[in-house]
Image (cartoon, rainbow, N blue to C red; front, side, top):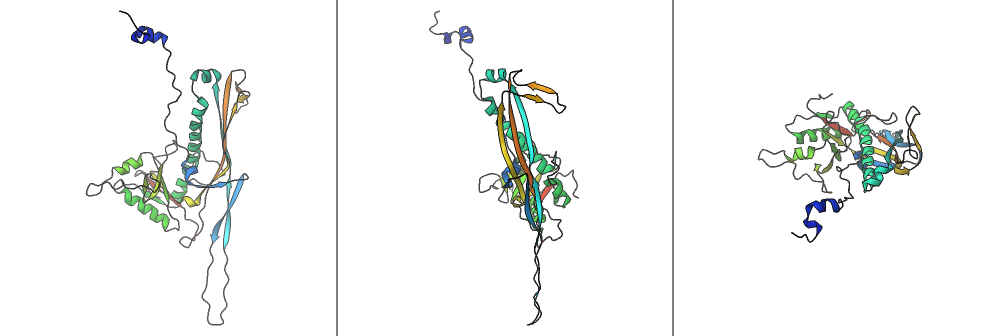
Length: 314
C-alpha cells in the first residue's frame, strides 16, 4: 500500500513532525490587592505622609437676652501619620530554562509577582499578618476591638449584614463596600426566601459585579483571606487610605551576586548563567476615624466584621 504523504503513516509522523509549541503559560487567574483597588490612594512625595483628622467639634450656644455675650468655640485636628514601607523580592531563573521554554517567561511571572504583592498588602492591612510596625492596627482586629462585630449564625445572613452596617452607621460612618472570603457570593446566591425565590440573585452593583445593598462586594482571592477570622468585612472606604511612594517596578539583571541574610553568596548570575528579576514597591496604609456628632469619645471605627459562628462576639 502506497502512502501519499507522511501524515498517512502514524509511525513516520511521530518522528518527523515537530512538537507543537504553545506560547502561553497556563496559570490560575490572578488577583491583586483589594486594599489597593478600593482604598483612597494618596501619592506620597516622601517616606511619611501626614493627614489632618478632625479631633474636636465646634459648638454653638444660645445668646442670653438682647445684650447677651456670644460664646467662642474651636475646631481641632490631629495629625495622622502614614509611613511608606518597602516590599521587594528577587526572582532568579537559569538561562537554560528561559531558552528552552519558548514562551515569554518574564511576562508570565510578572502577574504572579504582582499578586504576591497584593496578597502581602491585604494580609497586613486586613488581618495584621506580618504587618509593618509603622502601620496601624489592621482592619479586622481594630473593628473587633471597637465592638463592630456580628456573628454569622447561618440562618439570616442578610440581617447579619444589615445589623453590622447599622452598628457602623450609628457611629457616623457610611458603609460603601464589602470584602469577603472566596465563594461567598455563590453561597449567597443559593439563599432563598420563604417562597423559594433567590434573595441575593439581583444584588448587582452599577458596575455589574456582585454586591450587597447595592454596594460592591470583593471576594479576596489572592490568598490573603483568613476564613477563621472573618466571613465578611463591611468598610467605609473613604476613611481607608493607601499611600504609594513607589509603584511596582521591575528590573532585570544578568550580572550580580545574590547573598542571604548571613552574607553568604547563594547565586552568581554571571558564573551560573542566570538572570534575575527584581520587584520593588513602597506603600503605606492608614485608617482615619474622625470624630463626629454621633461618636465623640474616639472609639468609633469605620469598618465591621461578620465572624464565623465558632467565634464569639466581644
